[in-house]
Amino acid sequence: MKVKTILVSQPPPKTETSPYFDLSDKQKVKIDFRSFIHVEGIEVKEVRSQKIDLNNFTAIILTSRNAVDHFFRIAEEMRFKVPDDMKYFCQSEAVAYYLQKYVVYRKRKIYVGLRTFPELIKLIKKHKSEKFLLPSSDKLKSLIPEELNKIEVTWTRADLYKTVVSDLSDLENVVYDVLVFFSPSGIESLFKNFPNFEQKETRIAAFGNSTVAAVTAAGLKCDIVAPSPETPSMTMALDKYIKVVNKK
Image 1 (cartoon, rainbow, N blue to C red):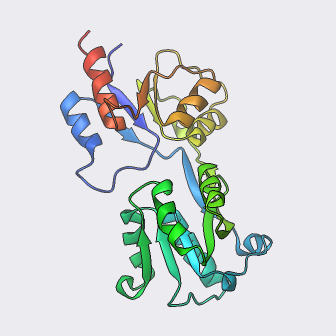
Image 2: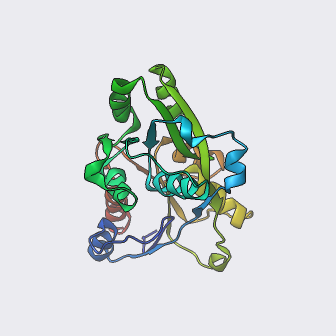
Image 3: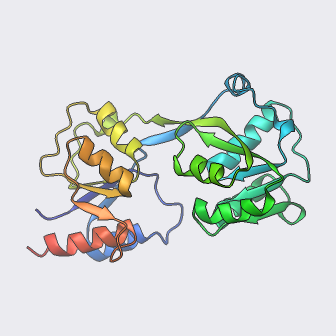
């Protein structure tokens, strides 16, 4: 079956230069965006129950913009003045740039990884005397604690926000040719919103091994997989698939 409509389980792109818009124009397909999950902050009393004392830390490990937002939210709610000499270890340039929302960038000690957490670990390893705080969601990739424990640094996880299933009830009678997922949480949201969901002719696209595994575990067929050496991005994987099926 030809692909005419795609639903991407993420918020709409914030820029007009998104590759999804290019894909839509190129292949003449309709692409909609909808968050299947969203983030909510954990209340300060719940954070306190984790016995987190912000005074005990000399460095913060920031893996996402959500981590940045919720660290400074909790610091404010706890009336904790973040010291000027606090060190920030950011997983990517995007996270480091976002940090400017809260601190004067040029006056702070900020260390930036290339993109992945193992790359950031190389920087953290050079500062083993620091006491690290890891602002986290309730769902933390196992890779992160594993990598931190390997290098034997002093670190503490603080759950400051959580992933919540979004209400998708308005999509109940809407059918798309392709559903695009980027995390197991997206698959979880699909079935929480639509317990009787049947794939039928709908194609499923999944990004990452854990998402592919979640699709299969849910009894669904994964038709489009990214990344791969040939298609490192989801838009490239979609483009390749559409070229084939829409020619028939």
